[in-house]
Structures are given as C-alpha cells and as structure tokens.
Image (tube, rainbow, N blue to C red; front, side, top):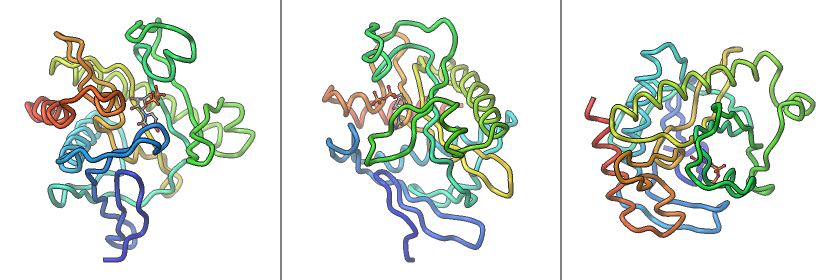
Length: 231
Ligand code: UDP
C-alpha cells in the first residue's frame, strides 16, 4: 500500500479514514541523522516495547493513539495531528542536558524536569520555552498545560514500571497529537527514545550504545524487551 510518510525509524501507511499503520524499521540515526546505521531486530523490539507501554499507560488513565499490534513490526494507531514539539522529561542529567550545564551524567535532579524542543530537522530540534510555544501558536495554553501534566504522570508510571524490572529511567522523549480537540500521547516509547540504565551495573541499555559506539546494541535492546514483557 502507498505510504503516507517515511521518517527515520518508522513508515506510516493509511489504514482507514481515521487510522494509520505504523511500520517500525531497523534503521537507526543519531546526532540529527549525521550518524546512520542498522540495529537488526530493532523494529520488532520497538514495536513490542511501545505497544506494551502504551497499553500499560492506557490502563493507568493516559489517553494514547495506540489501537493494536497488527504484526511483529506494525501497530495500528489513531490518526492525529502531531504537535511540532519533542517533550523531554528528565530524572537524572544525561546527554545534551549534562553537556549544556556542565554536570556529570547520572546526577539526580531535585525535581523531574520537563523540556521542550521544536521538531525541526533543518534547525536541529532547538530547545523552545513555553512562552515561545504560545507566542508562535504551536499549542494553546490549555494544551500545553495538559501536555506537561500528562508527561509528568507518564514519567512516574514509566519510572515505576522500569524500576520493577531492574532498570533506571534517566530521561525520555514524548510526542503528542490532537484528534477531535483532544490531546493524545502519540509516536513511540522505546529504547530509541529513552535512556535506561541497568540498576546493578549502571550500563546504558538504550540508543546511547549506538550513539557512543559502546557495542552490544542489539543485545541491550533484546534485554529491555525481555524485561518489559516479564509482566
Ligand atoms: N530523544 C529522542 N529524540 C530526539 C532527541 C532526544 O528520542 O530527537 C530522547 C533521547 O533518547 C533521550 C531524551 O530524549 O532519552 C533526552 O535527550 P537529550 O536532549 O539529552 O538529547 P541527546 O543527547 O539524545 O541528543
């Protein structure tokens, strides 16, 4: 079937007037697509991890675009109008945050921190403050407030979920969409979009293994899936 859109990690196909089929690819990119590679099996893992996490969040009152898994690499979701924002929640300093403020990776933050980036490949996803989001009309005040509240709730739920599976959730990125005036959690939640450190060893079990050439990328993704499915 004709694809609607192809991104760096997923392809979207129409699946009905109100739904899409999302196909998860094995391709991996980092540093605004300057680094490219393949993580064999990643698409299957990210589909299963995302589906499991969407179901878990739905069961705890979070509204998402997720409908069902349709194959190993595909899920069916509601069509939404994606807000052009990457919403990041941080529990501990890592990545661009640690670099920006000159703090050691792993430093705990006094409070969970919500940050926003503008989704724009040509601009390299620059940080954007809430006032600029409102001034540019990228979201309304009520929508932004809902996005922030939901992100903090998702953070608490995911942190508990992973803590029970021996993984420390350091930070993650969410995207939200609008459908019939309602804000829904969209996109994916996977080792591509989170930092997860093994509680015992402190080893990263996520895309940082690819970004930093740490090796054992596929094995780490497999292990995350194994723990996520443990129930
Ligand atoms: N992240 C993402 N997509 C992006 C940028 C970041 O999924 O385009 C995730 C990343 O995996 C991490 C969190 O958001 O879990 C915070 O990332 P950060 O801002 O530190 O940027 P990075 O160091 O990944 O460039």
